Structures are given as C-alpha cells and as structure tokens.
Length: 240
Image (cartoon, rainbow, N blue to C red; front, top):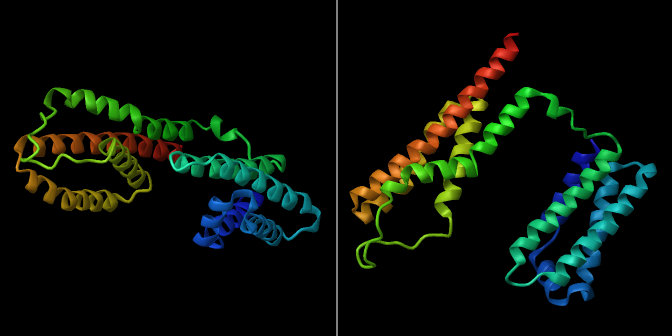
C-alpha cells in the first residue's frame, strides 16, 4: 500500500497541484525560485497525509529531500533542447525512489519472474515493439513506394511516426485480446480507417494505399497472433 499511496501523492503534487506559472518561474529562476521549495513542501505534506503514520516520518523526509535533489538537478541541467528528456528522467527518478521505499517494506519482489504465464505475456508484448517493426519493415522493403515530386503528394511526416503508430496499434490489439474485449479491436480498425481515408484519398496513389493496407494487416496480425497464443495459455492454466 505504501507504493500506491506515494504514487498518488506524487501525481497530485507534480501535476494537479503545480500550476504552469510555478513551472515557468522555476525554469526561469531555477534554485532561486520560491515555488521550488513550496513544491517540495507540498510533496512532503501529501506524503504524510497519505501515509498518516507518525512512525513513517522518515519516508516523508526522504521524499522531500530526494524530490528537491532531483528537481534541482533537472533545473540546473535542463535546456530547451533536452527539456523533454529531462522530464522523463525526472519522473523515472521520482518513481525509483518510491519503488526503493516499497522494496524496503517488502512490498515488491521478483517472484513474478517465476510465473511462466507472465513471462510469456511480457515476451509477447516486447516482441510487438521494435522486433515486429523491423520484421514488417523488411517484409515491405521491396514494396516501399518511391517518393513523389513535391507538388503531387503531401510527404511531410513526423519523425518515426509510422514506427510508433505500428507499435501502439499492435500493443492495443494484444491488450484488447488479452482482456477479452474483441470489440476494441474492431473500434480501433474503424477509427484508423477514418483517419487514414482522407490522407489516402488526397494522395491519390494506389501503391501507397496498398502499402499502408498491407502494413496495417501485418501489424494487426502480429498483435492478434500473440494475443491469441497467450489467451490460450491462460485458459489452459485456468482449466488445469
């Protein structure tokens, strides 16, 4: 329970109870910003309220000290170029501190690694990320449409957008199947079709349409295959 309580306190303190004006002031004045210290005190107060145990005062103190050190490092080394990276580093470090405290109270262990079903699910989910992207890219490499002249088709695209869209759709298909909500797969296919229709209609290129369709089917196929295999394994274990 300590982990959940501290995570709730962190989410409230870092996102709900921290106005954008405080963030801007901290980024501008860094360690001289009064809001940095108010922010740390709010985290300590929230941690104490959620734990509500005077004997756990040291956790409140540890949360406050660690939060100040992590935020101070972020403000000191953060630039416009690496702001996004530092945001995730900052959040990961905060969660690691909370996880470490939970480990101390034996709320966490690695016994789940002995469960073959969980390992299969983790393995399937891992396969559906970059490995599946590489396999699909290689399968489609001989059909990749050649770039069109600038006046004929809109070629602007976000960096690696296709890769991450594919990863997300495979993981979503996998998740929907694992929780036995097949209607979610149909909804996602329909939603993607709606978003893609205008792009493909504007492109007026049959090869591009076929390329996107094959890539989508391969992506969904990977997610469905892994999801079905793991659902069968879970059902078999439940039967036994």
